[in-house]
Image: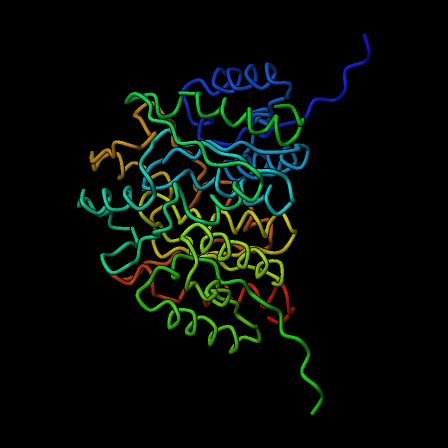
Length: 195
Length: 195
């Protein structure tokens, strides 16, 4: 057998780092990556020994370690499922922009079939305005037929992919990986060239 | 008089593009930029003639034009005020990540003094869970004493700035520019070197 070539590295962006068992969530995604010929890189891989560190210094080290991890990766797959509001997690959005600026493919999935416009309308209909929120009835809602803000979604389509929308059972929004696997198939086509 | 040197260009990231009068909102920020020795660049500056374009093609052109505008800028100031949820607008978060990856300073302000942890707790206490949202009671809340997700806030502090938190009257979350002006003072120190 010939020596194995280096497998393309995928940065696994998403709010799974906030799950009760983030290591387990990362391991599930990494196993799927391996099955498709990739190395999955989970943000927590960079987590450092925080003992003795102030909160501010811990935050700084995690952020810089994650930025370095992104630079070490060939592409990114984002969990774009809405998180604490109408849209995806903002740390994940930052990471999509970061990799996009580096010119590397960004792919993504969301575990709701409801598009951005309808989610925004549901948000307003709920009527529970948060006292810190800048939205107002006369603020326009993007109407491009997209799943997410156009800066994010177009970055995905310009990468050669398409945002995967999946309807999942209630409670499985954070853990269902069917959409993630569909992104891996896109990644394979884009990066490895297999069909 | 000697010829004027090129003024540093600031990309004006934020959800103001969704206001009823985005041109006016952009003009107010640009005037403040000029008063501090900068050229302000508002995302709508890139808006193209959309007549005859499909929604998908319009979204694509706006996104690519904004990416090109960012590459033409020396730094970014983000309006990080929460938008339709606990956190800032995700298009803005994408743009902060984009400029950060390019190695250019990113600065930011938010028109609420309430930090991310407390906002997340207020969100949950509200109890109006959106049917598409991935948050759940056992999902952890970042507790680093920060105004926003650590990837965003550390990008600002590593740029040499600090996120500006301002308490503004209800209804002025999207339009109050005191925090924006404080960012311009930071920008002047960082980019022009003046105090």
